[in-house]
Length: 83
Image (cartoon, rainbow, N blue to C red; front, side, top):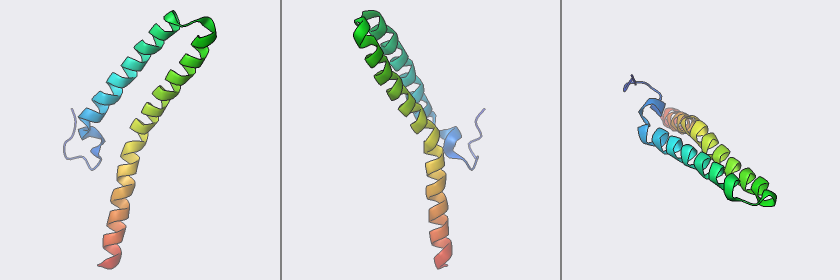
């Protein structure tokens, strides 16, 4: 169960989680199909590209909560410095 009053927004980001899950699953299916259909000399390059895209998607998924926390911290420091 997700705590809606958690100070971290991560638990409330259902759509971001759903998007990352579906895009990762789609990329894995695309990878499997491209390996089956590609010529042997092209399979390695296609695999590298799709795995790089999958890795980028997962890194963005992991970094986004940290970026939001940093933005909130900077906003708090900016407001706290003037008051």
